Image 1 (cartoon, rainbow, N blue to C red):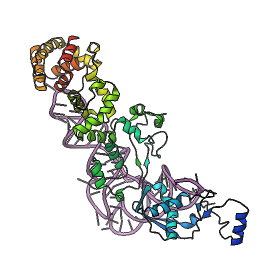
Image 2 (tube, rainbow, N blue to C red; image 1 turned 90 degrees about the vertical axis):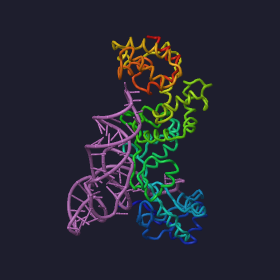
Image 3 (tube, rainbow, N blue to C red; image 1 turned 180 degrees about the horizontal axis):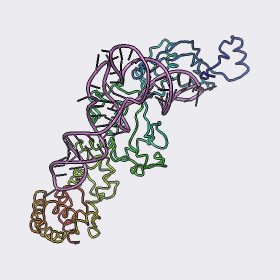
Image 4 (tube, rainbow, N blue to C red; image 1 turned 60 degrees about the vertical axis):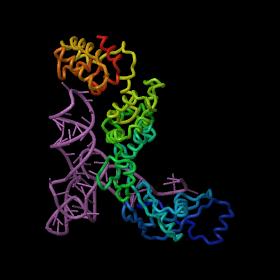
Amino acid sequence: MGLPPVYDGKCRNLSEEEIKAKLESGIPWTIRFRSEDKEIIVNDIVQGKVKFDSSLIGDFIIVKSDGFPSYNFAVVVDDHLMEISHVIRGVGHLSNTPRQILIYQAFDWEEPQWAHVSEIVGSDHKKLSKRHGATAITAFRDLGYPPEAFLNYMALLGWSPPDGQEFMSLNRIIEQFDVARCNKSPSMFDVFDLKKAEGITLNELSPRELEPYLYEKSKLNWLSNSHIRAKQEDDYIREILPFVKASKIVPESECKEDNDHLRSVLLSLRVYLDYYLQIERLLPDFYETDDSKFQPDSSAQEWLKKDFAKNLIEALKENLEKVDPWEEASLKEALKQAGKQAGVKGKDLFMTARAAITGKTAGLELPVFLKLLGKERVLNRLKTY
RNA sequence: GUCCCCUUCGUCUAGUGGUUAGGACUCAGGAUUUUCAUUCCUGCAACAGGGGUUCGACUCCCCUAGGGGACGCCA
């Protein structure tokens, strides 16, 4: 009634004889901590000084009827024996702390430094639930977020570095981190579009099924893209290769770190990647080998319908055929030549050529794409018109 | 019910009595890229509400509302 449930002290003051009698009668027993009424102050690095009234805690159990120590008793003994200096945990544990302090005091042991950090909530401001947010971090690994990118994002939830820099290497985070700069307020893990996921339990989805519900423009993606682009080339290749293999788009035999052609393709594409699994959507442009089935998409068709398209395509065939070192510079030159010949220039030239050869209206710089696709396949595609 | 904690742009946050309340992501617009992306520039956008204290409150105190957590022989 108006008070939290507290042990009523029924057996607090039993005499030796009474205790003996009860033990002999075989009824189950526990050991409780006898707590005096006093104010307990948790001196917390994050939360500040938080006061508790021990009368609201009462005599709590430290040894259970099965003979095992209760959690609060066990952690204190364990942490003390292991000489733990800092106890850092979620703020949910704050209210356990006074009990633990009572035990430290009873043993006359030195308390560790306490730090209770805020917890993370889902997009609905409720704590991470089954429905969303509680998704295993392995799902993010399997999607191909570089670990340091995910860590970077998580580090920024409830904490910020003194210099305000957000994109940080793992070493930088370690250098800058200080629990004292952690927030008390809960922060939101905001990478899923819950509107899209209406009625879906994200937690039960496989990484691939999860993908459509990720915000494309989340801060996580932005950070991840930055990390991917900042990598050493070799690291990038090594990390993405398993995803390339798994896609089965590139022949197994070509999935080698020292395959120059594959390397060039992957390096050109990396600016587009927020996570490695996305490479699956980009790879077919270069490895879908059957050019006879080549079909420009609808937006590309628009360009191909223009009256100058036919002439231009003929001119392209002619000029690209002659390109000898199949390099970006000479390809660009040939494109211009073809344009001059067909009397087409600027956007009309490049977009139509792009539509004809790539089948799309967006993508890599045209000369780069042509170089990577290779002479034979470019000409093959042009022959389909 | 009782106790504890939280509340700054949509999101992550800076901020510790005097700031045009700053940054980042998103979004909008522009520049560059003869495409998309990138990059760069500009812009939109916040102190939950109400009382105090003070010459002066986002900052300190109280109340309300909302949110979270804890009140086990679970960890």
